[in-house]
Structures are given as C-alpha cells and as structure tokens.
Image (cartoon, rainbow, N blue to C red):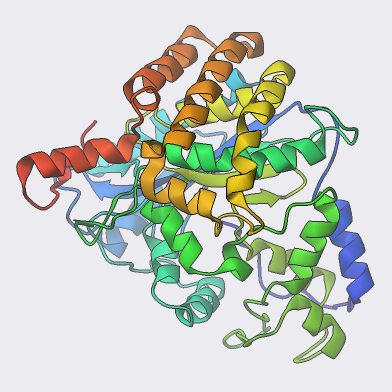
Length: 433
C-alpha cells in the first residue's frame, strides 16, 4: 500500500472534468506485448524471541535505518503500521523477478537477524491491535477518513500484508493477451487466487470466521475506496468514471493538517473548485488513494493475495499468476475455466460480490472455487516450463498444489487446525512453517 507521494507542488494548474477523464484513459493501461513482471511483498516485522511481543517504534526505527544500506535492487518502503514492503524492479522474466527478490530478501533478513528481528508472512496480524508507526500527513488524513466507516481502515493500514503481482496490461488488440481480456480475467481469476492463498484467519488472537480476514477488511472500508469499477468492454472508460466518482480522501495543504472532506468526489471537486481547484498533481495523488483488488497503473497490479508463510511462500502465487496471464495457451485455458464463475459474481464489482465474499470466507472449501483452482494450477504447471521457470519454482508450485489445492485447503486451514487441535488461543509457535 506504499503509494507515498510528496506534499503539494506549486504552481498548480486546475484540471477540468473532461481533462481528468482523458488523462486517466491515457495513463491507466499502457498497452503492448506482455514482457515484464514484478512483485511487491509485504511482511509483518516480528521479534524473533517471541513474535507476540510488540516491536517498539524505536526498534523499528533502528531496523529501517540499518536497512537503508542493505545491498538490494528492490525498493524498500514502510507501511503505516511498520510493515516492510519490497517492490521489485520490472523484470524481463519470471525467473529474473524470483532471483532478484530472493537475493534481496536474503540481504534484508540478514540485517534484521542481527537486530533480533524477523519477517512474518501472514495476511493479517493475529495478535496485535492496529498501531500506526508512520506519522506522515498522508496517513493522518487516511486514518481520519477511514475512521468514519469503522475500525477496518486502521486494521488495513497497520496489521495487513500481501503479495501483489504486477503484470503488463497487454496488447491493444483482442485475444488471450489483449488488455480487455486480461482486465476481465484478473477480476474473475482474482477470486480463485484469493481463495487458494488465503492466509489470515485470526484477529485479536481469535478466529474471525473468514480465511482471509485481510480481504474482509478491504470489503469493510467500502466500495468507493477499495472496490473495482463495473466490468465492461471499455476498461479505460470504466476506470476513468471510477476515479471521478470515488470520494476524495484528502486535499493537501502547504502548511498544517490536510483537509479531509466529507462526500466530495473528484468529479464534484472539478466542478466546484472548492476548497481550491484540483490540479494534475492532485489527480495523480487521488489515484494512489484508491485500493481496488486490481489497480491499473499502466500495468495491472493484482492486490488480492495474502502474504504467504515460509521464506519463499511468495514465489508460488507469483509463478501461478504469471503463468496464467503471460503464457498465451495458459491464458486462454484460464479464461475458459473461470468463465463459469462470472454468473456467480453477478453485477456487483469485486470484492463486494458473492463470489469474492465466499472466496474470502471459505477459501477452497467452496466446491466450485476448488474445482476451478485445481484446473488453474494444472494449467499453470504446464505453462511454467514454457516461461523458463526453474525446477525449484515448478516443484514449489506442485508441492503447494498437492498440499493445499487438491485437498481444498489453503494456509489458513493449517493454522486453524493447529488451534483446534490444542484447544487454546493461538501462540506464536503455531505460525512456524
């Protein structure tokens, strides 16, 4: 979620409603051959001696200061609650992405280990209440805005972590690698990925009744902030309308707290010009405050996957997603496989429709999602060698398929089973992988 943008810039030139629509249409889908892949991996930072202990702000500050000198190629950023995010550079292949991020994580873990800290791969902090680490004006405004709809916003900001896969938008032309098809596929296949990789069943040390509590938090903060646009044959137009009709989170000020309006959409702002006319910079900033499950940023950013257990657990969703999107044969097969889910999704956009809600609540215990996931993993495994995937990667995907997908399970089920077996509240040892 680290979309930090600096404060105001002067002078500003106001943008009109038609200009906003044209700008958004021009920047959200950069079409062309799918050539690059990236991944953003978020982690909770934990005390190695006992992850149930709270990592103090002072220890987080020391850790992030030490990481500034780590020899990494990925961008290192900090989330509002102190979570660590590594954002890979665009890679020319799946294996280049895997190798780069793996090396970077080795370097990061070595630095943290010296300080007695480690990384925990789970989608939602099972023990700690939300506590904000960053005090930048952006997060002050975000907290104020999200608090109006309840506590879910603070949890999303401070206690969640994900694996976000970034893929090129695709060709302008139709076909399995065309941008219209890929946009549609992302919103149908996204529910399958959510269910297969659900890994956040706990909050406040208790089961929430959802296998992906992280996804539940996104649903709870509302469609205007975390919902997708209505799917149609014109993704550019749909996204432009969504951007214009989304509530403005904040109006940045050169001095003092930022203004947090009520009920002001960006469309309203262009028409009223109050409290001041919006600029192109304000538009760019507004887009960074929208968190749909699939976000077009020139490329496609798939945001529905929980952080995964184990040091290399993030590789499996990255590999599966890349295979199903970037291999033409696999993309066509995945499209045909997930088409059966479209009717169940209905007219409501993700993640607020029945398909996505069931995926977050039940994971692959849902029979239809289970059946589709089994087919999609089989398709991905056939495609990965064509993408140059190493034996290490294909073996990891196959092992995940056998351990979870074939059995209708996900990592959240393992944790819940261990808790049920002990009959006690969760302990940090239950999260060991």
